[in-house]
Length: 352
Image 1 (cartoon, one colour):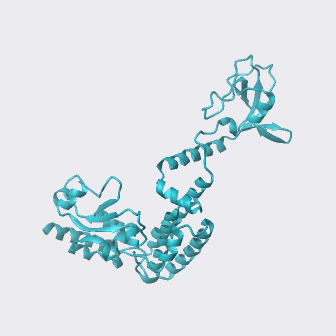
Image 2: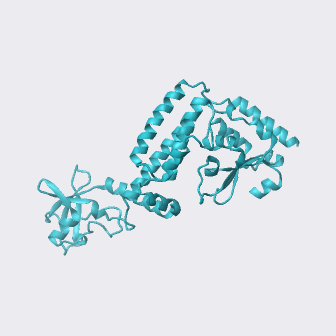
Image 3: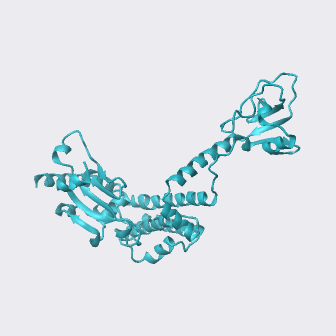
């Protein structure tokens, strides 16, 4: 099923502009996102083929089937609750039956976890982004040899330094395990013997061992930091996946303000925290931001240091925990009542 088919078959219950335009936080280059709710055709609903969601290729336009929509409302998922709070000037279509779905029938103390919990995850995401920006990685991955060290005196030196100092080639070296010492190897060097080398090639992901004649004497003891190498490889892969997939416009914006964090991401983090507190204090929330708009724009334009924002967020989270403890919201939404509402709307829609 496509978006065009939804509209041609008059299956829509609701359609509205969402995202930054709904929040009142858009700028001249902001995309126009659409979110909506639809009802499956009666024949499909009673058949094998079920459709929970329909979207375009970029997910700029996303429409949820009524059952999924109600289910996510019961779970207090922010993106779904926000649809119910859409400002009037963003609504493009609203079926009379959609008015039966009321925000106050779904809000519960779960919002503390769905709104504030998601915001906390975004702070961690921003911290990860900052780490990537501040600590760029070369496209060429480091060699295993760069994670090896040779014992010298009461300390150690990098293996590559040891080899250069002695004019040795890693291809002419052989390694054997040192018993009872994980990651520790005796090094042997003899260009005339067919040793396996410390690694098989520059692209190797591990060291290799050799068969050493008993008469040969080790030239040193080497330690391979295998755990450190594994962590590095994981971070290297994640870094270059991020480089290849990142939104270039947002990245350039991040670099422009020079604070080394995703300002748009942090703005929405604080928006969610503020909305969570509103829910606990008032039993509802405003999608269109007004009282905190100036603050959110300052976050968006990089007027704060990242560490300062984290401190503000941590204080806000403590306040949210306290106010949710005292609020009169139910622990969870009434799932039985929600189910009755779902059946009622679907039944009436199919009779039209």
